[in-house]
Structures are given as C-alpha cells and as structure tokens.
Amino acid sequence: MNQLTISLIVPMYNEEDNIDLFYNKISQVMNLNNYNYEIVCINDGSKDRTLEKLKLLAKNDHHVKVIELSRNFGKEIAMSAGLKYSKGDVVVPIDADLQDPPEVIPEMVKKWSEGYDVVYATRLKRDGETFLKKTTAHLFYRFMKKITRVDIPADTGDFRLMSRQVVDAINLLPEHHRFMKGLFSWVGFRQTSIEYNREPRYAGKTSFNYWKLWNFAIEGITSFSFAPLQVAMYLGFTISILSLLYAGFLIIRTLLGIETVPGYPSLMVAILFFGGVQLITLGIIGEYVGRIYNETKRRPLYIVKEEINFNDNLFCTESIYSDRGVASTKDDI
Ligand code: UDP
Ligand code: MG
Image (cartoon, rainbow, N blue to C red):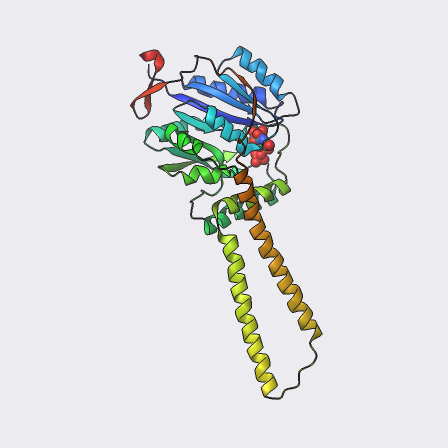
C-alpha cells in the first residue's frame, strides 16, 4: 500500500486546554485519510501543563513526538525547530488552538499531488478576531507586498503544506531573525493556494498582543526589505530640495527689499522638524544595525531540553518516491 508520510509541526505555548481536542481532531483526519503521520509538538517554554499533557499523549501514541525547548523562544523559532526534526514527505505547520482546521489538509495534499511544492491556505474569514487586528493585518500584508520583492501571499498564516524539498531548503537558511512567512515564500518553488475560514481560538488567549504584533511587523519588514532605509534617503532629498527652494525664495525677497520679520516660529518648526527626521532616520538605521549585531553572534537558534519519541520506527524515517504523490514507505520494501 502506498502511503504518504505527513509531518505536522505544532508550536505550543500554554495550550493545555486545546491539546486534547486538537489531538483528537488531527488524528481523526489523519487516520480517515490513511496517512502515515507524525505530530511534532514543540513545547515553547509553556508555563502551564502543556508538557505533562504532551508526555501523556506521547506515551500512548507514538505518532506524537515532543521537542521540549529550554525556554520560550517564540513561535517562529519553535516552528524552525519543528521543521528541522520533521521527516515527512510533506510538512504542515499548524496552530494548536484549532484556528487552522485540520480538515483542510487532505485538500492541500490533493494539490500537492497535482505537482505543487507549496500549498498555502488563505483565510477567507477570520472569526473571533477583533476588527482592529483584522484591519491592521490586512494593511500589513498589503504594505509588505508594496515594499518587498519576495511575494508574500496576503491573508495567509503559517498554515500550509510544503514538500520535503522546500523544507530542506528552509532548513538551510541560517538567519536568526526568522520571519517564517517571508522565508516560506523566499525559497520559491511552485506555489498555489486554497481558501478556508479561520475559526476562533478554541480555548485560551492569543499570545500576540499589539506590541508583539508591531514587533512582528517590524521583523517582517526589516528582514525582507531595505525600503525603510530608502525612505529615510528620499525624505532627506525631498526636504533638502524644499529648503533650497525656500532659501531661493528668501534671497529673492531680500533682493526685492521686502522686509523680513524675525522668524522665531519658522525657525523652531524647522529645527524640530529636522530633529525629528534625523531621529527617525537614526532609529531605522538602528533597527538594521541591531539585526546585524544579532546575526553576528551566531548563537544556536534554540536549545532543546528533551526529545520524546524521535527514536521511534513507527513513522517511516526513509521514504522512496516512486512517483509524485505516491510515496512508498520503508514497509513496502
Ligand atoms: N506559540 C508559540 N510560542 C509563542 C507564542 C505562540 O509556540 O511564543 C504558538 C501557540 O501555542 C499557537 C501558535 O503559536 O499554537 C499561534 O499562537 P496564537 O494562537 O497565540 O496566535 P494567533 O493565532 O493569535 O496569531
Ligand atoms: Mg491562534
């Protein structure tokens, strides 16, 4: 029997109330479609009982594999760890809070077997999110599209299916500032999309507040674009040209003998305005310098405290492609 091997990558931070339902739902979809699968759960320094629950599941079901990170590293890094550990022919990062419906996965697999390397899931609706979050997210994706050369699909989260070749390519990227959505697109390959409705979170609260989202946006922009540095330059140009024009205007006025009033207000405005522009420019440069600094430290991306079920043979570790979409497993040999 030809069986496809799927790795699910599930970053988890304080998800104790979601784990059981998530596990049930995902296992159901996997078994129903007769996939050979592994659920790679990355416990990203949870402060609740996430790890205990995961251990219990892993003990009873060896499809569940656990990577316990030494502290909270953030979702992007947790996902990177999962990608490194995954072994499947196709890999699907998915949130633990059931916002990404597992039922969509067979659809993705179908597209994959048609020859696509990446099948990303675009959100049609986002239930249970605030108006502000939806609007800012919408604007962010449009803005990113304008200023980066990498084609990052709009309204698309990390929920997508990637072929082994794509995952191997992503695993080669060494950078620390990992805006995964950008990296997923950066590697290229044949990409397509399917649409789905994003459900509200099942339990618990989102760990992304606006301050985190703002930082996430800055991460995305500075990782994939020089545009902000260029904005500073163009702003400088524009202001210089305008001030030259203004200087010309003043000279002509003086030559014509028009009396000039001592210009305290205009002076203050000019000083404050230029001060502001310079600070902004410095700030933008600082963002990039900070990133260069972080990259040069060359620290490991994450530290793994414990691995569970990874030495297991239940999930085939080697697979041989007979044809696209039909992967024969070790058991067939
Ligand atoms: N997550 C994580 N580390 C973090 C924050 C979040 O692994 O530091 C996981 C979280 O457990 C969930 C996924 O990333 O599985 C998405 O997080 P969340 O639902 O809070 O984000 P949102 O859906 O609101 O964007
Ligand atoms: Mg969520």
